[in-house]
Length: 124
Image 1 (cartoon, rainbow, N blue to C red):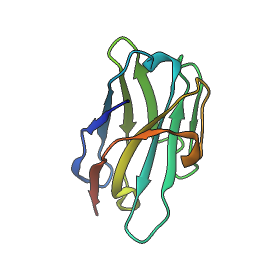
Image 2 (cartoon, helix red, strand yellow):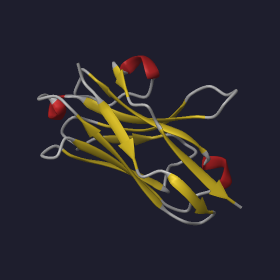
Image 3 (cartoon, helix red, strand yellow):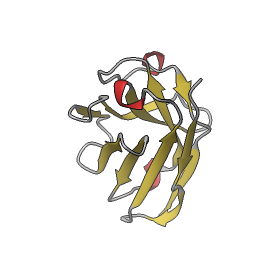
Image 4 (cartoon, rainbow, N blue to C red):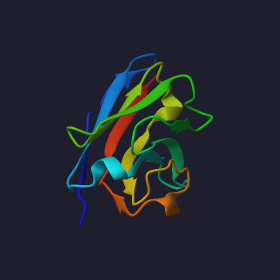
């Protein structure tokens, strides 16, 4: 069983930055893809970003491309999401997830374990 714990969310003004962290348990962290999704009540879960097990391959949703950066530190079993130039439309609960494959994945079904989420609120 893998446990994921997100942190780093909060309230920020438009144009500001936040860095989210996702700490994972388990001995095979470096073998598994990591992903970030976001959820707004009444809307479908939205893909934000994904990173391969090695960290060499990344992918982003169109709405965050050029503003967000995903990374990971396999020695610390932690993934990160650096969010810059935040907009009110970025307001959501951000969830990290991990899947039992080293390649990147954009779909929720690519992931086996999910964190509880961290709230990000961007004020205008």
